[in-house]
Length: 92
Image 1 (cartoon, rainbow, N blue to C red):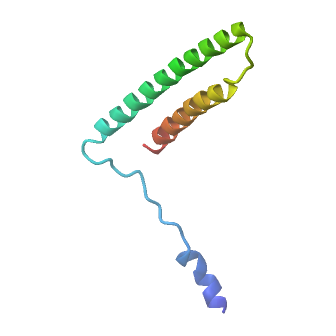
Image 2: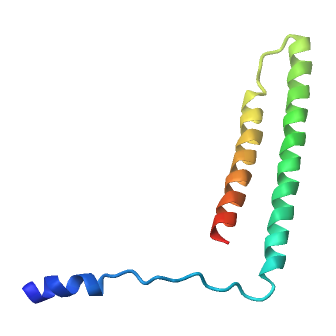
């Protein structure tokens, strides 16, 4: 039993993957990911402006603030894209 416990750290050791080398053409993938992230964030800014305009018109008409849910969705999308691009940048 003692020999099993003594051998456990060598058996359960985590293999170090090292730095690794990216495959050929990886720069193109990074460029595409950056373009997509930039485009989606630009669309999120447009979405916030549109929802804000609709909220202003609804307020002027005396209607309630029913657009808060839409604003949360647009801002949630922006947070999702921002965190995804940061995660990909950390992995690459």
